[in-house]
Image 1 (cartoon, protein in one colour):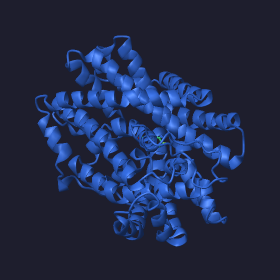
Image 2 (cartoon, helix red, strand yellow):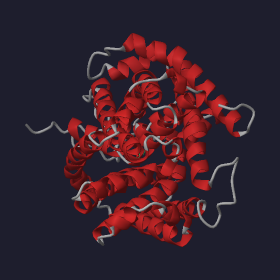
Image 3 (cartoon, helix red, strand yellow):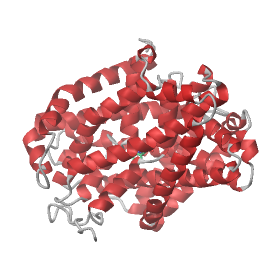
Length: 466
Ligand code: PFF
């Protein structure tokens, strides 16, 4: 049956020029398309491997159904209520400095994420091209990835290629086409991920990895588990970066916000779990759960996947298929990050689209190039002990996103009020978890954010060791 078109803005006049989704399904697919990306396939497995396996997973799931749920609901409801992206949404409730800062901190996050996102996108593109060239065996060799990221010129080249593709799509306005392709690619990605996960889990010695990933062991708990799990939850669900405000402003009053939140959370987590099952058991199978390997961080996915593929016999073929899907997941997410950044600039600076794209190109060159060089020629330069890419990742995920989330919570608690949010949600359906929402927002969220923010900053400054 055809979906009812519900893209009309909720308040004529204010949102009259906003584009919209082609109905409820279009909205869910767009949010899921933006949610599923590098965060699920690259970031989640390496953080889970590094910060306690099953313990990380448990904390992640708990945070997602409480804190994550509250934030997705809040941002979407505020976006739909005001018909604006974050800066405008905050300004709709007040013009003073705190409102301005609250809106901008949400809007700036995607601008800082998209450059280093494109650096990783470049790594994916490089691997895809190498698989197409038939270099599967070389990719699986020890030290291949480490050598690659140390060659700054090469990393920069692939970063520029990936970024140009993203800009091309944004400028040429072929986003619709890409989204259509990704709707086909996503189910294929899921199928391939299931196949690779089953293969990985069934390797000799892999079972220990499955246990490490799925069974919480309290010995593996540290505060860093909570800090990392929360940052990952923001990143993966596209929370605290203005995206959900913007998407919320595009939807009609008939979209059941609570139901679609649950669907997106479920889908996003399923993909992350699959990626964890592809990668962590394989680390145990290939290295016997070597701690150093588990701590490999950002490189883990790129080292482990080629090894799994090459041991599969049909590895080259699976490698091409997998990295193609991985590339599309990264591309659609990067497009939505850049699109959000450009539209915030358009809305707030009242500049034309080309000028906004130009400014973003400059930001991307600066932040992306430093990130590209950070593991190579600039690897002696560290900020608070972190390489550039890790620093930008830390700054956005562990500092700015908690601040952005904090502003949203305070806006609702002190200014908007629960009643208005409830009315907004109830436009389309009953608000089933209203009491829980109020409780989490009022008591859990601010405390959680304050603890995380303090501990991650104190850790980086060396005041405490997590
Ligand atoms: N959620 C994406 C990921 O997990 O890779 C990252 C992201 C994409 C965040 C697009 C925000 C966004 F608009």
